[in-house]
Image (cartoon, rainbow, N blue to C red; front, side, top):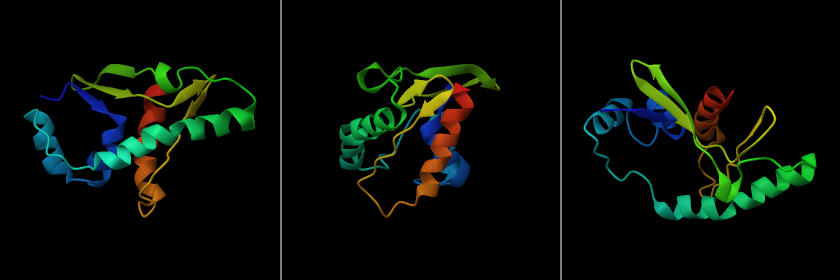
Length: 125
């Protein structure tokens, strides 16, 4: 059963990207998951997100909280019908949420990333 909806899953649940909404719900209800991503893209993004955070620091001349190895997951328990909503942004500075979307797969439209980013804003506001 679904206990927690991660903002990174908004792509699947809102737009049916990666996998259909119906199939994703089935996976989550049965606690099974078909491998629908290629870890080389995730690994590349994780390795290079430091560059996005560093750029934010340089532009804003501030040191945000909860960055890189100090990232923190934020949860709204019982958000809807007993299901929690959670996110792990790349950093926070005051009311500013930092999300560094660094992608190896540049053919992925930015709109697909916006669903996850919107979810992060919902949880951390």
